[in-house]
Image (cartoon, rainbow, N blue to C red; front, side, top):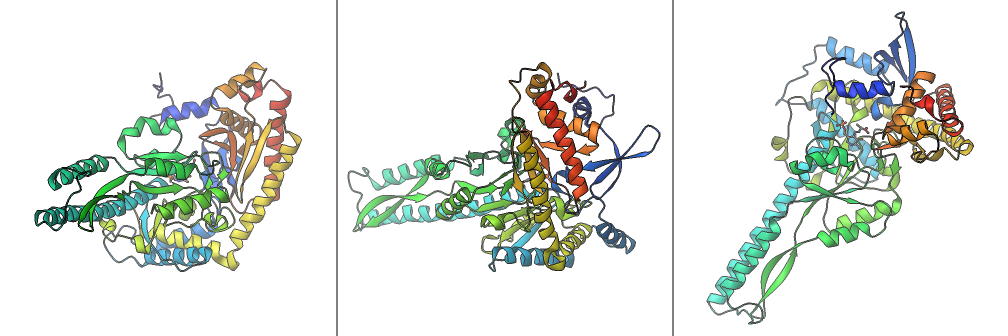
Length: 516
Ligand code: F0G
């Protein structure tokens, strides 16, 4: 049973037991840069080098001094934090700055309206809802047009201007009733989202439907619209799915006095939602071919593209948006994580102006979203990133190359242990080979537990005081997302830890990975 004991308290005790079983249940008392501190038995601080980086929320490090100063200043000034339904120049300024940066990276002058939210998953849900609002409006316009055509046909046949060819139907009324029945059947089909296999877009009732991991998604399948998951490495797969699912509504036209049945495209797909570099699913950058197919098919079928930059954005891959390098252009963008500078909970949805519906601002809002502190911290984050002509982005690329070079050298020395290293900028992964069939019992058991990367992380934490985690839907892949200030010495410490783990996997029975 998964009934937890309450030995450690009432706040998610089950998760804590899981962490404890892997030796990962440290309590941290202070944090700075890439370092977390826990207390030793004598009360002294023990430093732990952090390569998790808040799952990507700490591009600028823990307790960045400039950001903390700004936060203190805002509090000292008694900045109104919650003043809903008032003018919000801080939010306008942040949205304007985001527009400027996004336009620079896209190399065009598309404008985006901003909807603020509290978490990444909420920004994704806002995108899903906005796109569905838009689909609903397009669909109503289409069904109204069809209804008008049906009534026109009825009138034209009644006054003898048009006839229903016998091979089409017995009478106009029968034909119209038939068209209506077929359309109602079609319209009863719920909307569908498209997203790549391996996607992660959050764990709320809507966004979890776009999260590939069945363990997260399936228990909540009945709560919201479903996604079709598209293979990332099969050219033509997306087109096939869209063609397979693409339904039609029937319409009537009169040509040369004869009533004809024609098919109209039914906008069934609400949106294609994708991460330029998949994070939680195992660090996979999308290929240029896949991106090109997404853009082409979505443009043809009028499916809006939602680029989820919650993890890959905010400079992490060496540009503000990871989509920039891939030439991927979105109708919507989501940002969160590092937008809050490591202290605020903040997210934003950007919606391309021609698609935007003002009524959405009332349809989606929250007590906490768009608060002054989060927006002003977000502005500070952008100021730091944009300073010196984008030194932070260049540094993310340079540090990323250095870190990737180290990971490649480990792979080269342990080819039987490390399957792959990959990623971009400071969003990198190291995938271990699957050990489920290892001859040594302990190693095989660790691999078959479904928590392989967590056991590796536990060992690295205990023995090296370095904090790493696997991507949670692909537990053989460790993910590295340190801040842009990561030093050579910190990379060297990670290297020593990884080499130790690789040697244990290669040369021992792996018992040291599972000490319990
Ligand atoms: N989208 C992406 C691409 C994410 O990586 C995440 C979170 C979310 C949405 C949801 O954001 O947690 O603020 O609600 N990813 C984390 C991970 C948790 O493990 O990669 P949230």
